[in-house]
Length: 206
Image (tube, rainbow, N blue to C red):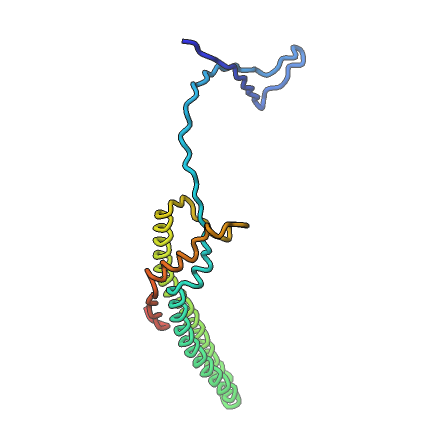
């Protein structure tokens, strides 16, 4: 059987190896013979069929997202009212403390001042907890939206044979026939018209 060979030269230069000035010797050259494998047919390539999705629009206009935003707005308004009430009470307490400064001893005033500062810190902690709880319930609701969206896109891609769906923000110019946004909005609104947002825990609750 005939075989074809090719000589491949690999030069290995060691850091400590230098040119011998007397013999003008060069670093060793290692010759290796490698057999050329017989050409194998390459596997058939799968043609790509690409579609585009405006994800920002879906997450803005989907009915489920709008329902989440509406509920979150009501929760924020309620928490804002609570925070404003606490701020008003703290402002009155600070004004009263200022008036007591004229009649209290320095020690008594310092004690009342520490109590007031403790109330301020506790109020700030409650406000921070409210913000975190709002974020938690919103994230939980949006996970439900994301799950429905993923299924809609996957089903649509399977039906139409798309091998790749990319966000419109990753494109410069795209044919409108490749845009799935309208169809995705239509399907997700049907599959998930609304999402019930869990009620945020009150500040201080465990």
